[in-house]
Image 1 (tube, rainbow, N blue to C red):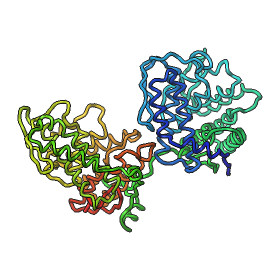
Image 2 (cartoon, helix red, strand yellow):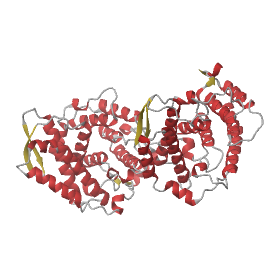
Image 3 (tube, rainbow, N blue to C red):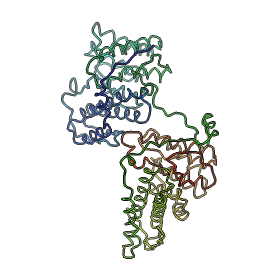
Image 4 (cartoon, rainbow, N blue to C red):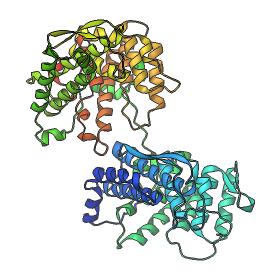
Length: 587
């Protein structure tokens, strides 16, 4: 069955997408000073929906990391608005992954006037939109039961009836006596009875904006009637199109959340494949944004047959989008000049040794940036000796920082950078390197194969990586890499790193290449090549979100590059061709 989607004017579509990342980041930043934040977060959720609706005209399936994060951010904003309305005295955060920013609330707001039907009650359309978005983005939220407008006293309202029908179906929840919410569990047959009960009170009336049609679709879903569900969903979509076509509806009208959410419930809970072919039902929103099967899993397990065949046919290719630095004709000589100034300080015998020791991690960071800018401009790196120089200086500076941090207080150690050796004092203040800086230093050392800097990284005590009861993926990865490099059994730490990364997989950060490292631990060369392609594609996808592609870190993943160079150096083939792997560094 085919249901065509209505059209939106090109001007409105272009306006929804133009400069969206910058606009939404500004909107989120201004929320810190918004005196009516619930209303502001609802507006931000609406802006995300307009953006997604506009994108769906070019990407009908709405797949990819950008759409996934935008949808999740819309849900975060909508749920945050509900929480501010219902629980204005609670402490909680509203974080928008797409903008990489948010606001923490400490109960400083009173309930906003005009944001409720009555004191303490959320308007039904706000509840419904928040629920649909939360379900589609797999976001758990406790607010929906407490935020639901009461059914008693509103028996004739289809919108309130739909709220309670959804609570019965999704949460197994029935409103108890005296307007008190009594938890289920509610069995499937009881869910159908509850939906019938709230629907029976509606009587006659029109269906604006589609709540009765949604109730019929939900009833068919609850009863397990796939044929009836398809018919009702088709009616729901056709009614939606009839309401919005020819009007001044915005791009968000291209995504009827009620129909999409019900189709997603059918697919995710019953395994029903959509039988309606319509741009109103983007594939990724209905089926979810779950990642596709990797080419290989940890320790070389579960290699995909098609991936193995493709690798046997020749090198795998992972493309890189042009970096904005190239279009902007960024001048890398500015970074070279600053590097020269830093080296002049290091050469100067009159420079305070304590200041030099303190600034070693900053020196490393500056050289990382210098390399990344040059790699963004010249992906091959063959004819750019400054790339290698930046990597080597950064590795030496990072290793030097670790060396002075390990030294006994009151002693001095030799630190060599750029062919110059200085005696620098032990330094254990707040400027002492942390595990993340160790990760940066060891990646630089692995890329260039610098033995002395790598030795300084390996000689760090294992206790350096010990974390509390909430380990981070980065810290766990560092501990596993450290064990691998120092020649002790790395599998316990590697297992821990894999578990930690899997637990945090849905976060907004880019996880370290734990699967890639596990191939080295296992000694699986073919698995390493497959995991390398996966890691590069994951990096690329991460930087498609919003403005992330403008970050210099988008040019190259130094953790991945470091492991690739290490594998090449120990004699493993690296059959991947990609601008993310500069040929000049892999030769």
